[in-house]
Length: 518
Image 1 (tube, rainbow, N blue to C red):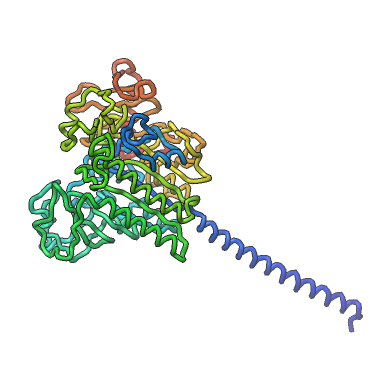
Image 2: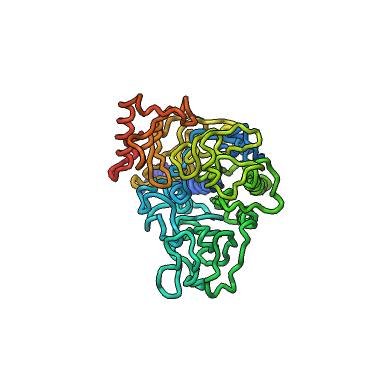
């Protein structure tokens, strides 16, 4: 029989062993619980994101970018004063479809099947099956995604006869919509590319407006119609000058719903109005509100409705945890506007402005930049780009670092802790450090392109433009000294031109890796 002292020691040992094990298990449980709670809290602190993409708005339209602007833009100017404005930001192509492709995929559009120009009516998606998109990335990161306005990246429309839609591949067709089956959903459109909620059209000249995948309405246009369509009794007709107001209401309704939602997931709102694109469909209450003509009135109307969205955010109490981005898809079609200038036909206007005018009654939508939408010059490809995130992004800051619309995907991926695979968004650079005001040369080059496929390369202060079919040699400008591209230096810097030609070819090749460009 064991002595009492030994028995007592064994009991004490067992007691402390049990207590230690219990404490260890308890500590482990607390650690696991705390870790899960921290992860849950981290997901809750992901910023909401509002991305506003204007359509054909110029670099010089905003007062914050152009002190000579005749268009009052108080809401966008306030946004700029509360965040960072990039003064060397680029949409890769000077027309809408390819720039939207770059935004949505982080990839230059010349890598898609559509090498240049915009998608015509009813053409299929530019986005490949399985290709990761900006909204899909955010959806996978835990975001509720919604888009309102303009898609213009293609979709498949059902037809009554199984043939291609009438007017396929055209921009205007008298029998538009003749064989569209309005009772069936579209496929491979914005909902299938990452938007859980969608209201808007694919292409304005098609007229059709989708809610989700269903065709529910049509735009009433000056230029286009759906007169030939069958079975359209249930289709709502939306006058083009009421479309912006409708999109704003639906965007605000989405925000209000998210603010009330019990799931508390962060949201991504893509507000892509068809403004100030022609036709200049200004609401009656905004006609004559500016000194910049009908075009200026339309920009002022856009600013007002953007203000309503931002006011809704402010009143929600969630503004401090919301990242707001503003950009345009390309430069303005107009090089000058005003109350004494007829802008009904932009081509007439563009043909008459080879030289700049200094008339105080003229508004220059692209500021002092050369060119306009469609062109390879800065007026076509340089855009205003503003980012605001209270407490994270410095206020009232201007950055001259090169930024491209295709950088949005990698930048947001970094900010929401999403690891992009190596072969995804290959032309997108993480600019989050520049967003936060830490001023890094993340991107030293950017490829730009005109609507007809002519390419150029911005590298540091220099811009090289390939020759077009009517030129023997290209163009070269020092943008630091000559922002208006008035002094062509192509004959003075042979070695630099050859170097930039080579680099442009490397970037546009199929074997290109963005790691080469770091």
